Length: 99
Ligand code: HEC
Image 1 (tube, rainbow, N blue to C red):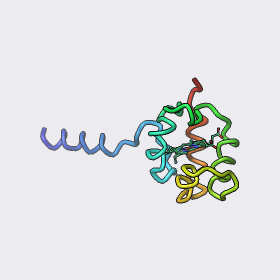
Image 2 (tube, protein in one colour):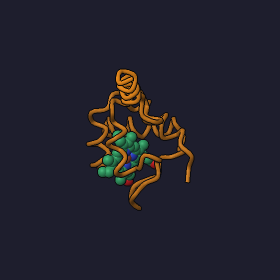
Image 3 (cartoon, rainbow, N blue to C red):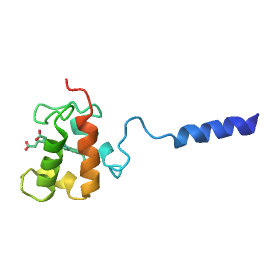
Image 4 (cartoon, rainbow, N blue to C red):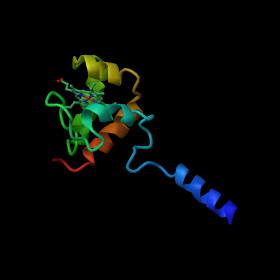
């Protein structure tokens, strides 16, 4: 009996987070304070990402990463991203329902 409940706990702990992109390198967590887990911004100066075109989001992330689009916070955020991270993040936010 005890063994079974233990297995249950481990199965739950190992379950992937709801809708967390699998290849974002854990980056999604760091976007949430500003852009929201639901892609709806918490601040008037931060754009909503939910439902935005995937290709557009990916282009913007690459632009921040390469310093073509200048913004201090987003440069800092995108510095460590791989292209795979950016693709996963763009796919995630574009899949959310817009406000
Ligand atoms: C400290 C707050 C902050 C954090 C954290 C943050 N962002 Fe941003 N983000 C902004 C702001 C502010 C802008 C608007 C930039 C501008 O005015 O040019 C922006 C812009 C963007 C844009 C362009 C949107 C558009 O409509 O052009 C994308 C895409 C984006 N962020 C993705 C992300 C992702 C993905 C993460 C997490 C890895 C993240 N951001 C983390 C503040 C933040």
